[in-house]
Length: 315
Ligand code: AMP
Ligand code: MG
Image (cartoon, rainbow, N blue to C red):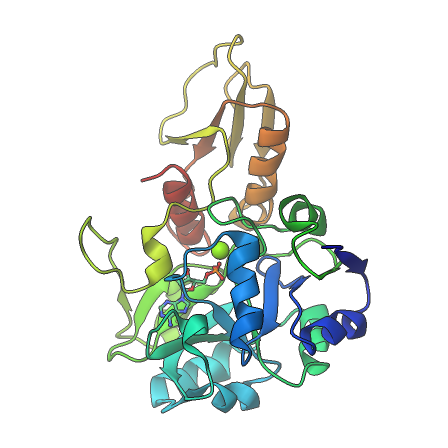
């Protein structure tokens, strides 16, 4: 299949409105979208990514007043979170309504809904006559794509269109809160921090990591995720030096030990989040064998960085 690369949201929407599959920029990471109401179009996302069928997709709507096209029974907790954080990097799990096909929600009675704040994504959705189901635009298991070249590397020739935009400004996937339970449950950390969620929902609970054999609250939680080819070493206390004979990289907030073949010292946790997945991809392209990742403090977006690092390390 030929992948059309365009800068025009209207052209990309043309494909979506005809049942095609389109990658597009958002503030979190690039998404891979299809008409959420067409099961055969949504099936194409799973094929292109090699995504397991039991991993549900997030449905993207252009504005908060279009949430009721896909969800019903929106309670006061959800309304408060929508009022404070939509549009933005927050996904709410809500009761799904009958118009959402089972393939989108992987058979669950609920649906994840997000309203991106990215102007190009908003323009794209504005040209569509339906909501857009979209997971991250990467081959399943690999780091999410935070720029269009990463999308092309993973999915070029396997999707109809790639809407080119600037690199994602956040760099990590959305925060996910399940509002179908009381109190609501934080399923995945992201740029909307636990601290800021607690200001709106003081009794919010945090989902614990699922143990082998348990049914995860969020199906995607059970899969190995965000992984580069290189092995990941989580750094609590930094080694003094690396073995110069072994291609090693370093990413973190502190200065690296001597001998790293490639290193990235971030000025803030926000920068760490923004560059992390691109750094993983660069390391793979350069044949780095081991990436040392410094664990940031568990506050603000640091919580989400730690989550992705643990998952990338297979922990
Ligand atoms: P991605 O867009 O690739 O980050 O994947 C979306 C993630 O959202 C999935 O891996 C799930 O863990 C989560 N998700 C989507 N829909 C639901 C839902 N209805 N209930 C719980 N988690 C969901
Ligand atoms: Mg993903």
